[in-house]
Amino acid sequence: MKVAAVKIRGAGGPEVLELGEHELPELGPEQIRVRVVAAGLNRADLLQRRGRYPAPPGVPPDVPGLEYAGVVEACGARVHDHPIGEAVMGITAGGAMAEAVVVHAREAIPVPKGLGPLQAAAIPEVFFTAWDALFRQADLRAGSLLLVHAAASGIGTAAIQLARLTGASVVGTSRDAAKLAELEALGLKLDESLLVDRETPRFADVLKEKVGRGADVILDGVGGGYLGENIAALEARGRLVVIGLLAGATGELPLGMLLQKRASIVGTVLRSRPIEEKIALARDFDHHTRAAFESNKLRPIIADVMPMKDIAEAHRRLEANDVVGKLVLSW
Image 1 (cartoon, rainbow, N blue to C red):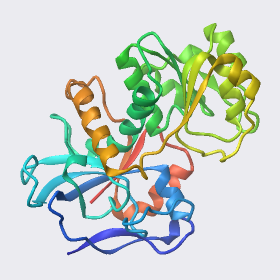
Image 2 (image 1 turned 180 degrees about the vertical axis):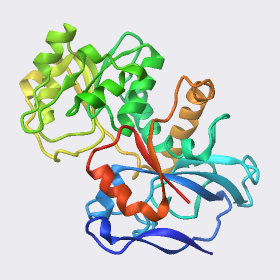
Image 3 (image 1 turned 120 degrees about the vertical axis):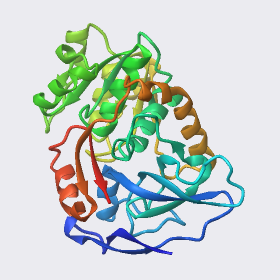
Image 4 (image 1 turned 90 degrees about the vertical axis):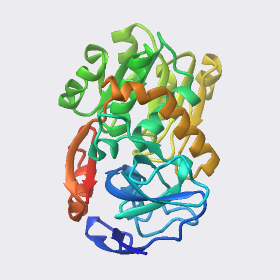
């Protein structure tokens, strides 16, 4: 079965993206086929387009997209919990920017009541990532202090909301004061949040001056030169969770400070995990957050919705860092 899809002609800039056709795999007994209404754009898609984040085995190498929202249109023989026509959303290792996607049935979760597909498409990748990093990896609790780097990103806006819902305090970093100001309504403590210089990021001392203590948990999607400052910014027995490497894959680690603070560093990624782990994460997230989405205590932050034909422009916008929250592409 052929469907329309975003195609990557080869490694390069946004100009290598185009709409074309994609052949869907046959439906397995435990799989569903979802007619995709919309898909969220993520920085991993930019990296894949540049040739720096290839799709894992078994995933189409030339069709990007790590999250989707749509409607179930076909079910495998062993699938009994997703009726035809059900609105669902989920993560996938690739191929979500197509008119349809085939996924394991238990990876998909129903769209919360009151949300449409455009809103739902902005949830899975960033909220799943933030939920897993904060609670399954870093054991964030009520009363903890969370520091979120790149706070205006999709993952940043999700993390702020999840942490506040749990009763944690949240401060963030950004290179743009206006972006930080927009996040105050989500629960970010604006007066204690930090502007970071692009060339020489320094935030550990400023954090302690403003708040009077270090962070219990740091969520870092920047990497690179933030490593040493992150360790300095942690409280004793603090946890650093690295979820991205926008500023580079290497940094200097002050081991003496790490030992003295008895701090922990965790690296995590969703895309390459075994299917069983992704299913467990999806079910755990759905169980704990569905009511909050349906009562509007949690909400996806969408910078813009663009037609799928404008995928190249969407990539340019995300690369320019001129958005707060997520860009969503719709068919």
